[in-house]
Amino acid sequence: QVQVVETGGGLVQAGGSLRLSCAASGRTFSNYYMGWFRQAPGKERELVAAISWNGLNTDYSDSVKGRFTISKDSAENTVYLQMSSLKPGDTAVYYCAAGSSSKAGWVATRGVEYHYWGQGNQVTVSS
Image 1 (spheres, rainbow, N blue to C red):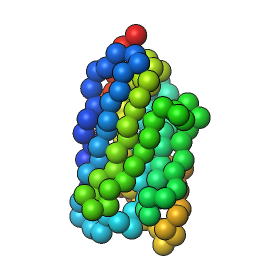
Image 2: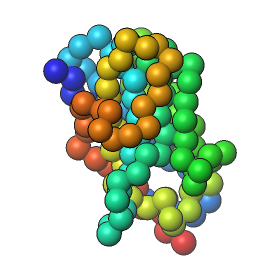
Image 3: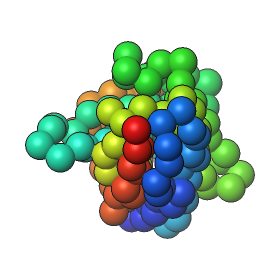
Image 4: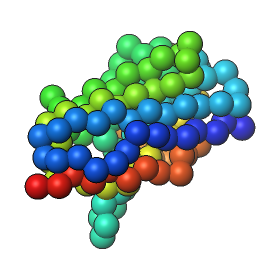
């Protein structure tokens, strides 16, 4: 069993930055690919960014490319989402998720591919 806990959300003005952290515990973290999803009120959950378990491959939604960066520190069992140039449209509850694969470079982009989810962390961007 793997537990994931997100921290770092909050309120920020448009154009500002925030960094979300996701700490994982319970099993060998280094073999887990990770992802960040978000869900805004009245909208479906969507992928924001994902990273392979070897940390070498990433994927981003078109809406955040060039503004958000996902990174993984296997030694610290933590994955980060650095968010810059934030917009009101980025307002949502952000979820961290983890899944396992034998493929070191695999990047999972669908929610069904993830086995463990955090509780969610609110990010609010004011205009």
